[in-house]
Length: 441
Image 1: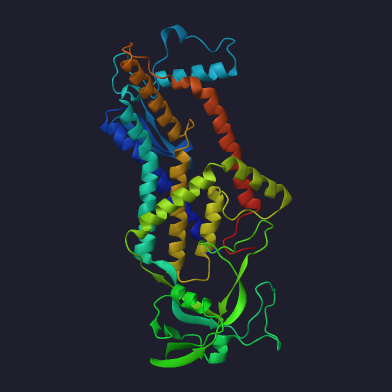
Image 2: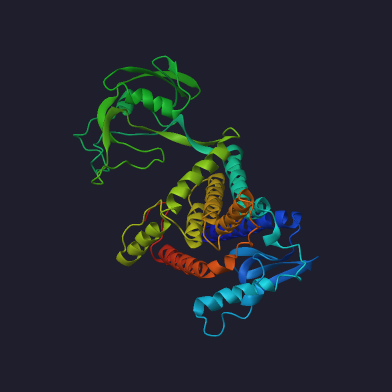
């Protein structure tokens, strides 16, 4: 239980670091481009601690569910003719727009203030808004590199971990051998746990994938297998049986057909399982893993509403959740806790938590690039639209247009925020009531 709590807590500490780095990604370019930054805050709600350095207040708030920096003039000032609109009979959304304009106006320092976000060139505004997500991506790359090259990835070796006593059908739920079951070829040949396979039919093998491929492709053929046992080489003759085995995809999950029936194939089988070890990988493997995760997360993110709806259905019906579906921070914490409390070497558990945290940063990167306000992607779209309008005016020699007033989008932003809160609530509740377990139920 203590290990579970430690793993859960470590993930939240990692999340706080991820949020801090995200906001630094906005803060540094904003200050570099001269924008006045009033606050740099980790979390929301009441302030727990803060300290002012120069013109910026740095602090931590009570709810560690995000963060923000407060930049002067995120939007252009309220036009004088609209300064009094919104509060008298203007309706709920009109009042929201006016409140947003009033809050924005408070960050401006007079009509001649040049240190404001909306006055920056488009490319500088895009750089500031991209800075946060990019920091999450870079942090994920560092974590994956540390995981792959520093600790190593779990890799099946040519050392035998277990030897099956018999051969059973892939469709059978049988757990023990019966007298009618054929003896497994490896056991019949005298192969033992701890043997390290050196060569098959004179061909040297260095990894289990290569070993497994040679066995699968040789059903009914006698193979001369040399193993290392007790410091010496031992020769064995193994004849793989033709048997039906499940088909697995690249992620190790069983492939199923349209009727959700496991797909099988006929292959050679001798009945051994390999020992897995953490093996350091080349330095480029970490970044490669990060970008592969970006593609996988993006594939989930674009159908997020549907995935959350399906999660909500399982919450009501008690059905099994999609193991590749979305998680809340609570769910990620549960996974980290399970990893930390697993019966595995400490290095394997550290690697598991690093993997969860790296994947979480990939999710933050992709999620914040969704082109909707109040997310960073929404601010990028606003800046690009402003740039398109200005370019169009220059091409046709028209007067420069007024800056894009994104406060008009406050009603849309409000709807997006409500939807995000609702989806977050569903995921959190599902992760408490019907969590995804790393090791099954």
